[in-house]
Image (cartoon, rainbow, N blue to C red; front, side, top):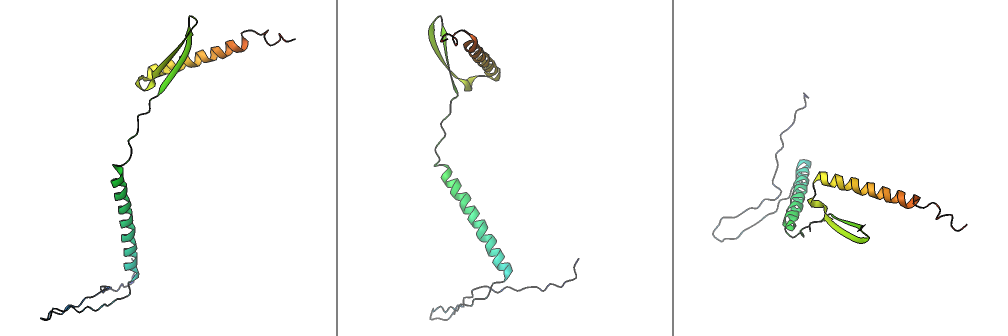
Length: 132
């Protein structure tokens, strides 16, 4: 521990009001301003900072009820295919699917898209050389 002797500080109020209690009911005020110590200035700064933060929090809370409600975003999957030379289109709401159903759909979609690419690229190799 340090051996410094700390003197006890006495703080004077920054403003003193003197009231005369005579019968003439006149108030006499005398302003007595003193210089604030550094501890008082630090305390005032901390109080101001805290009050600003609280004001911001209160403003956010008061404005919270005025925020627009989010519209539910639906995950919609559109599938187009041909069945017996008839074009078909299906629309699925993926938010109602289970995880297993989503995995099966992903596997099916990627396998079919890879097969279609492979078939389209290699279906007729002579089409590219017909111009010659």
